[in-house]
Image (cartoon, rainbow, N blue to C red):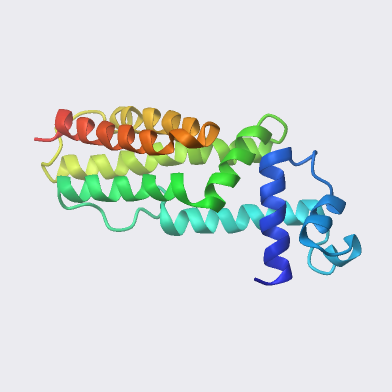
Length: 194
């Protein structure tokens, strides 16, 4: 791992634990094992580190989870819907970078407007729009009952978001949260499939 990568990893861990304002450049340098001036060889300052972390997490999330602009392959069957949705949830709950970023964003969303927007997009609006498109496509394929796809997307994701947050707060509950999420997704499909 390069020094720059180690700085980013350390900063993300510290931001998730102590918050942005509760983490100093000196603390980051000390945890990395370098002198504070050496940080400035890689980043202009703490905000530059934060912006780099956001860019990395956004790209990682986009690639592995998707968004309403990058859904990936739309499911052709109920089984594909179940599998792809479960894979997305497993990624978001298990990926250490995404988990730390989510914890950090939840804490900082009340202090920073940009971070509030990112949190809302990743925990509600963006996911809801993505699943609205997926569910609408499943309706058009005759696999789901015709209904309001925006409302159904909200019905699908809201409990998942709550359970992911619980797993973040109480890591020992992650296994049970995943089981309940999978049960919820299957129940949702049973209600709306044709």
